[in-house]
Length: 167
Ligand SMILES: [Cu+2]
Image (cartoon, rainbow, N blue to C red; front, side):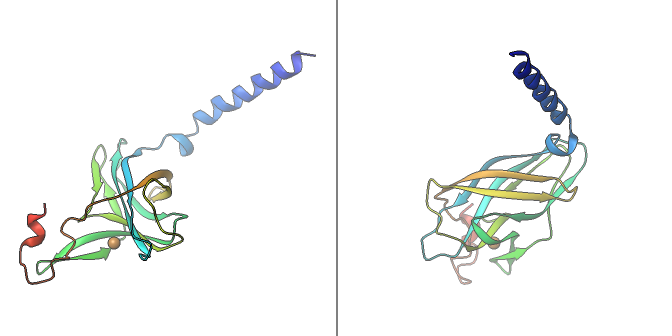
């Protein structure tokens, strides 16, 4: 009688061993560190996620799409300086060079969460899925935190280099 569960266990372990060498599942070259989502007041319908992307592989790659159950729309954004005023622009992809690192940070690249499903409160975890140009998909969990906004263009157009002083 005890032979059956043992046999079953052995089969299950064999299955696990096989799944560990399936490249499309676990041999991901992109890793994500310091992921966090900006806490926003309840009236706000948008937020942004920041993180550090590291490419441990030997080929350049790019994040080309993203989604999150916390928002109906997720877009890849960058900030560009237009005549001294920082403006957000949607970008087609965020590249991460082979062996290199790309930082998504306030005032620069970020993942925009648009049309939030519910207010994002400090301490919550938000699930984020990144889609790569090599068809790999990476899902991570990012804590909601208070994040100071630097050089966000709040200074208006009149204060000249105010945005740069914040750096
Ligand atoms: Cu944005």
